[in-house]
Length: 441
Image 1 (spheres, one colour):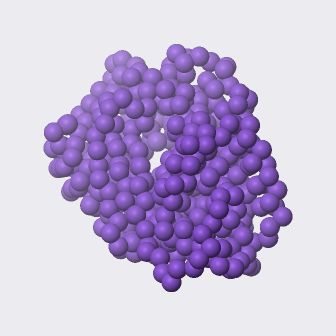
Image 2 (cartoon, one colour; image 1 turned 90 degrees about the vertical axis):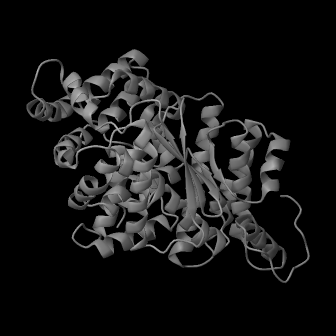
């Protein structure tokens, strides 16, 4: 453990990392902060793993010197593994600070996040896990297996809805070509989508003062959009323009990356857990961890929470299609097809599972995505690059959404009770709940 200041200042300012520092000072002043001490050790281990894995630390807004110390120390993977094992024992032998539900959830969460860290370290050390073993170890969940026959049922419905010559993929691509957002209208369209998502979120969730994000347009990425949370309730959201961006992506990305998705999720964790409670472990977000299934699942389900089907169609018709220079009277037709294609979501998981388990090669994985996911070849190849970089992370989007939806609706947050739906959604994104905890009653 690093040395700790032994004097007790009367007050501390309130940037995120200063709130973290306040918890450490409180510990030095004799208060019971054993969980904060364990949390600090965890944060430092996450930062240490980040020295070996450039993608691992997705966000960090704790004390800057903790990051610089991790960079200077350059702990080996073996040393990180040894320290993680010791910390795992210390967490197991330290009880929750109180019987409060959040305190108990915090204790369980920290233990499981640490177990995921240990699994990632073994992978970085050369151990290869099968797809399902990896997702369980890293994300606390395993996606169901789907056979090609199950996707064929959806494809048959699409065959009937998209008649004509050529393959189904060719007909689908021809259909979609009329719904591309022109590049010179991208920013205006996304701005309109963001405004709509934010306004709907603010009707139900009080956001921290000063929250904001900026949008950047980038190329050369394996993903279509990304939220880089900066701390201080600020995000940078990047949109990849390598491939054509279709009209549905405006609301999807605005909700998923922004409101009520990643931006709101991270801002509420910072306010409610880091600033209000001084829980230091939430000042860092390790990407390959159970936290990501909650983050991606709530971001995807948040689209449906903010925009129930009929309301989204009306918003698309009146706002998004005109902003993109498209005919609003075509929105219903587009979303009829879009809803069917969405049912092919798990085809991506199956391609990743076969590919990462070395049952098929990259070319065959792209072909599977073309056949069963209706990906264009460039989009399929981009997705395989995503598999290479992020591996079993793909389960967090669709399985995550399904688990979150079942959890929220199981607690009364059904579509015809929007107020309860938003309440349960907000409670979930403000608490340290694990994927395995979503299935328990």
